[in-house]
Length: 338
Image (cartoon, rainbow, N blue to C red):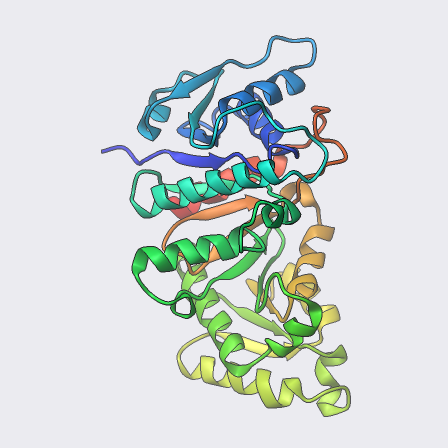
């Protein structure tokens, strides 16, 4: 039996998601073979016209079932209608209907992946304000997928811990906390959260690398606390969590000064850096090039990747969006799928 197809979700239709989807199928047909858009036919047709310019737009093939994507001819965009139909929402601004469409696409794809109808999902960017305006209780993809996976397994949310990994060819980083305020992120640096992050990182990368990953752990404070002079989180929380993980076979080291540990990993000393909060881990990866970064959700019972950028309302509708990160996200999803 062939592998199920890979679902690419619509993203926020008021942003660049539909454009990078259309551009990916146009510019990288071999990489996109066996993929389809889980979203809205009208939005993709509109985006195909935007990215085509003066040339004829890529035709859209409307699917009835995900499996039909495996037989879609090259030079087209296979789309499965999974959201409410109607006129595409206006681009370039927060729109509640756009947020609802983006969420519908992700929910459909998550349930399809959990049910085995698709091999995984690559999510085009959505807008967190639009999600909130649509009444969704999730601040982003990660939390939404976590809730769906927990419901599918019939377990409490706390029993389905997930972590965000951002990666490119030079650096991987995994976060202890994700979309919370900085004040709440500091409170999230607990032995349990750091230990869970180390476990999920070890288990996930062991599968993809084929060996135990070498994990560097960033400190929370400047100079990793300087022996307690700049804070005791390293002494009281992070060091014990590393020791407990090492006792279970996790190859974790640190905590290291946050301003240098990413350079050490980039040079090959470590396979991944565990960062204590969102911006600490994401800034180094994004600085190396947003067009190559991929967001991977670790800990889910499904494959999920996404490009390393947002909805870019300022250029939505111009056809100028760069699809490189989405194509890279598809490549990584294929690797994880195998």
